[in-house]
Image 1 (cartoon, one colour):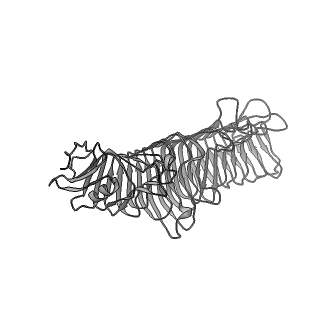
Image 2 (spheres, helix red, strand yellow):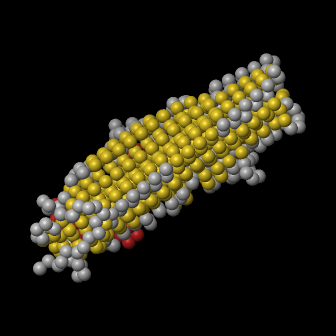
Image 3 (cartoon, one colour):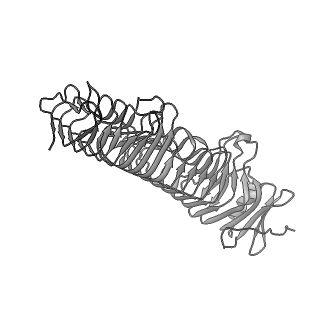
Length: 487
């Protein structure tokens, strides 16, 4: 006679059609809750759970207790698997790779439970849940530990909601092999491993990654990356969003790493990154990038920068703070146009005082109300270095050790603001043409330098109604057509 059916604390109001549990003697049982019929029982936990899922009535299966699974359990389509009172784990001894659950059809929901890969015992790099290319799969409220991959997000319309990734998880959510069409990772907490890894470099040519949203997540602990998207020009990524997240771990590389070129539509907002923040390098441009209400901080390991962004067309950055950085605060490259508003850089060049930049602007940039400053004795060698032609600075406050503003491009315009501290020129023009400075406050510097200092080869500089303060010289102009005009 089958033992009594235990009581389940289900997270949903629906009554399960099949229940699975393990009795005190270690025997697993599966029973139809409507008829009371025994579906399967025995010491092979995986076989009993599989029989429950495969039964005609097994569209909603609830599990209680700890099940050790010696083989992969497939979850058919149109199934709810409620693990709220369960632990599913792999054996301590395994001879090869395994998985705990493999999705085997569309429309699957997995609720709750602890999925334990026992990787530190069995020395196998296993996976907890393999979505396996199916659609409309939700993993909600689950916990993962001691496993290589928590969820392999290969497929369409995948949701990973309110999950906890505990100790010794290498990749919390991962896709390295194929199409991903709408992944939402929401409300998750990670104590180890990469929260999200999309490895485009290993995907077949022509694969598409579309609409990836990470929101309301917290990442702590130590990892190589918090979020990583690797590069392949033949695997485009469309619509990548990170919102309201805290990346507070210790990262050997980057808190956010989007190496991928041909990424179209990146939105990063309302988040904190406790480490380096990278969206493309100069050979990996990205397109239509928006960064708002973001803090990047504490990238103090040797060689680390705050933000590195490569803009293929338009970059919009607003209400951003970058602080406590080993080397450069913000580096922007690419062939696009960058629009920066209310961007503050504090306390960079921590690795070597007086050496690195607050901002290095390699493309045309339009800055409004931006600031480079320091709170202690460590300060950047250059406040802002401008390398993009037609760059404009409006009402910015910029200081640096050697130079406050270093103009290394033609046709740069400065309107208002305050430029100071650079003993070799609060504004230094490095052999460039047609610099225009209007109504700015500029700190004088001692001879042979000045508040505005033209280096050899500079010409056609126009300084209009600037206000110079402090001791020293106002300007040193070498261009025959350069002028300082007081209206």
